[in-house]
Length: 441
Image 1 (cartoon, rainbow, N blue to C red):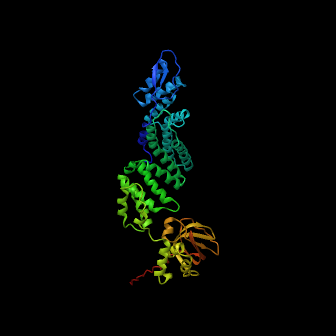
Image 2: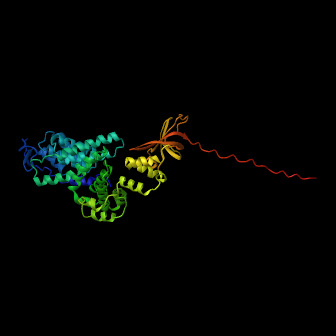
Image 3: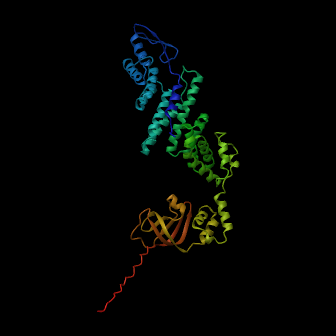
């Protein structure tokens, strides 16, 4: 799903109460009355000016309408209806699918009406869309910051004097979806997941119907899930809820969302049993019930798993390396020391470790499957004699060393008296002896 759909913006912009002045033709030049920009009032203008305005306003194509209004503004730069013309010009350019000229018209409109919601909506939407397409991180962040700035202005925009309260509230609620979504996008680009969560929850609360069909709002429900997942510490329960909700209504996009939903569920619950209950719950509510944490029980905590492992393993020395590492990371200090005591001072060979960092004096390598998958080092081998040839990162290398010490967070087991295990050369083949047969005459 695309992050933003132009149709959603046009729906917001189209809901605006565009000023429609009532013109009174007058042959000689006349003074505008009343003040410019007041809908429902009369603006007097010459026949030539009225014709230029009316020709542009009744043009049958967006391009012709835009050209007509540009000509009008050039001929009458101080028009009493300049604000109205600029807004219509902005909509005309949007109809030509020209984001550059639409933005230019929005910029000009905001100079005369800084709180114009349609203009702020276009600024937010178009700048965000352009920024999301950038590949340079710094440029992308700068662009999203600018889009979020227009969004923040839009959220605090005040009602125009000539607009009914109900019309303004309808327009504001629709525009808020675009504003909050852009703010969340900016927050996520900077890994500010807490603020992203706040923005998206505000957005989807005001557009709950849109969370039940594929579209930009439902996609933001998924981004809400990933923001919970990427928070520090991760909130896997809320991630599971909102990702499952997004998958439930995503139609053909569900296969792209479901892996995140089941991942978060398993990270919280420990296994997949009972997931069907969560799938049923999300269809009836956008937000999780207050008792969700008791409905879906959390997996045992790492410390509890360590305690059970220690209690049910008669000989701790027989634990697999991944289990030993789990105890060293998450066990109580006394349990971790007990497990490390079974190997401390012992020399061990590790075949085909993967180099993560290398100097002549130390190699940091991945040994366990988890470390290999995450491309992190879980062992450091210290050499008494510096290496003559330092391996490259990513190389596979066999090592021996003596267990010396460890740090639990992040886990790193240090080995002393390290040495590289040279690969054995294949045995030379025995020479082939050919039997010579002699024949006698």
